[in-house]
Length: 61
Image (cartoon, rainbow, N blue to C red):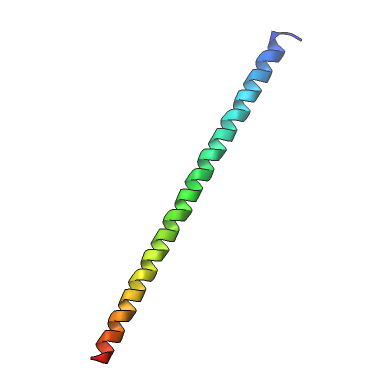
């Protein structure tokens, strides 16, 4: 087994490691986007709830 074989193995392992790191980064970014989406949905619900309360108060008066 010559030098070419070992170089091929090292390059293959480094590419696999690079792909694994990129997969982790992608997963983290995906989770951050999901969290941001949930924050936006929560803010919308808060605004809807506030609007409903204001509507109820104006109806009482």
